[in-house]
Image (cartoon, rainbow, N blue to C red; front, side):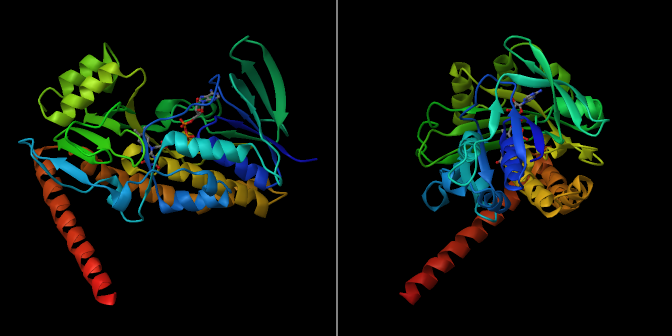
Length: 396
Ligand SMILES: Cc1cc2nc3c(=O)[nH]c(=O)nc-3n(C[C@H](O)[C@H](O)[C@H](O)COP(=O)(O)OP(=O)(O)OC[C@H]3O[C@@H](n4cnc5c(N)ncnc54)[C@H](O)[C@@H]3O)c2cc1C
């Protein structure tokens, strides 16, 4: 008999875990509370480890990437509204792959459908767990159909909570959100722009960052850019009251440059945007008995780290590997999985604070320091590229 696992959540971490489980010889069942698969989404830079995990999961061939030719141009707007060459997300070491979240999910979805060598994974939409009892030899889960409200009980050998930052599996099995979600006193709003900012080229990226607030426009080779507005605040709860658009207009009112204007005007017309507070999830252990958490539910490193999608893919691939290597010992598998993954997560959770200063500086001195650091890095990069071009010329 093949072991059965329930995976809660059809995001990057959930699908990665489901494919990893199938590779380990398990029979995963995925439940997703939404009525259908989501598409599109915001810019995601996929790092080396994420691309390696995609290969390990056998989905790299399905992944559509959208990097502008030669990395594209990034522009920084000065306080006077002038543009100068800047360094963007894609200029980080490791040459991140430019995608939208939906590109990774589409590739994973194809992977869950199976091929000649693997069977399709059972995915049930509009379904969520309402009770999880992991005290017996199996895990008993009460599942609810969101459409009809009908409930039924099933047993599994393992439950994988991949239900995101505000995970219900975590709340039911490990305790309240406040115990694990750390406060960052910052907000984000991410959405798809209908058009590029006027006077910039189609695939350009543009950054306007001031003390406490910033707008990033991420350009792609083959689709309109996505926008990210982010700001710091001392009162996160207050940000969720009233109109989101009005609030953002107020927060960004002192930044009257073309990027901010275009982004806020586009936001008013967009049917769909993400508006949320920023957190990290920190847990002393990611599993309890036969319930394990993966992805944002377990370790959300947050968007400033730029590692959430990468670590979601890696977490699922590594879980499959640990289960393959410890076929008859779930405890050993989960312990091995966690000890392999934790140093990587810890490192990126720490770096996120520094990266946050690059996304949105905390003060005027931090803004000035950020500009100097980026200008120096930009000059160094241009010199490196010129040297490489000269060396190529000499060689040919
Ligand atoms: C603006 C922004 C930019 C980002 N940029 C990057 C980047 O450049 N690089 C990078 O690596 N990462 C980036 N990230 C982070 C990355 O997108 C996330 O870390 C990743 O998508 C999280 O995946 P997940 O599967 O863990 O959770 P989620 O994407 O939250 O998926 C959870 C799934 O579970 C479902 N669900 C929730 N509750 C239940 C329930 N009770 N029952 C059943 N289903 C449920 C949800 O509907 C959803 O489908 C960014 C994030 C943001 C917000």
